[in-house]
Image 1: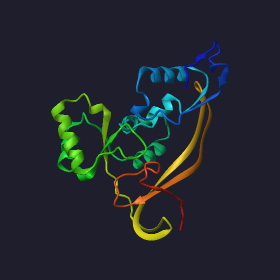
Image 2: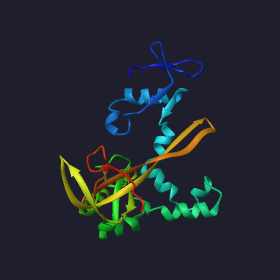
Image 3: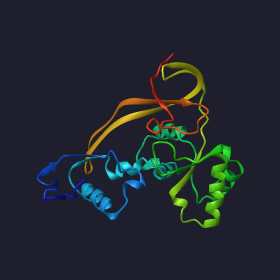
Image 4: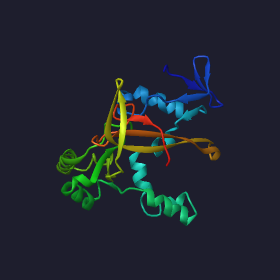
Length: 229
């Protein structure tokens, strides 16, 4: 976008146009910020009163590092009071660890099949598995710890595999697949005032069980529907 400004009321202006909503179709990968110009544009938009989708705080809340922090003892108690609700949430968590945890890193090097190494990225095609993960961890140990914050280690999940019929180029074939259910939510706030925080649908992604990668846009999975029995 061309560099804009905002007025005394915080309204974001690009030329003579007042911008009410900023929707980020890009801005999720390091290559989207090749120079300081892109960072300044992002900072300008975040400072304005325009509705950001997502805002930088909401964007960061979805990163692996924040998920790792939320898995630490007493972290959920900052946001929830009901102990039963907290226990239910914790029961859904997989193990999440910093690469500064030397005992976990050691175990991941010895048993890489039980871990996944994840960067602060989304969309599939970025995670590191198996022997590639073991080599990456050994390299980081040799190079020092400066790059450790770019990754976390996660307990590998082994979901239920189900026979599935897949259609591709007009040809139907049977394979073994796994699915992932994601929940859509709508969240809108004005500073500390939460205007909307609601569940509003789901997304089901299915991929063949032999693939380590996921992500529909990355070409590893397909959109699916839930069939309850």
